[in-house]
Length: 266
Ligand code: KIV
Ligand code: NA
Image (cartoon, rainbow, N blue to C red; front, top):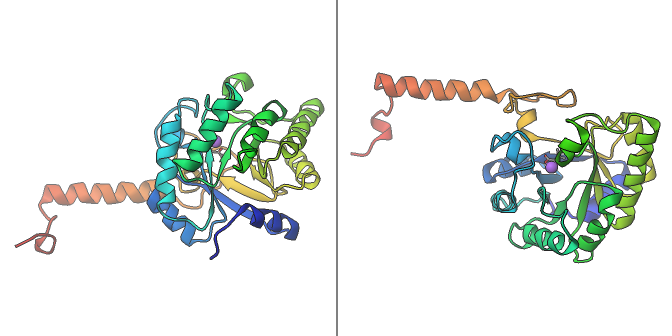
């Protein structure tokens, strides 16, 4: 396996080869995932929900993102690693956006950063690209906009709304994004955007016509019991597997059957 770079994703789009992306937040999982040949790893701010137990991604901090990015990078993945800029790390002004993007690369070790928003963050995307950090955009349903959207609802349903998202896609490409996540939009709109843009689109809840797909790891493993949106496919059900292991351990400790002599020092 060769180290994946931004150039690979451009080539993959040109060749019609789909890009496989998953979120990852720690070292052992990064080792496993990279061993499977994942193309891109996203250290998403979804870590706040699926690992830290927050109700949404808004409380996630820069320090938390750096901690998880560092953990993933210790696996020395061949995959291209993108780290999310958390809420309030890029919205205030361009200087703090650039500083925080730089921290994810310099302190976290990520190769690129992702931020949410379309036309209204075009300047921010350009400013970060200008410091030679590849930027992944994220449009449509943007979880950090939870309160404006009035919940996690599919975006771009009406014609006017769809056109606004289409314009967002054009704007982030023009601003220099190397790729864009399309989240929670009708598949026809995602198809139109994917055909129009020269940069690869990575879909989540955006149908099959994107250039790649991303899902949250805990969702595909059945480790997030709170809610399971329609766009998630569960590839494993690890909850019961963990339950069984933990229950067996407790039972053996109580019965005195663990540890045995082979687990003990003489
Ligand atoms: O934080 C995250 O996991 C994400 C993906 C769902 C795109 O932003
Ligand atoms: Na995110």
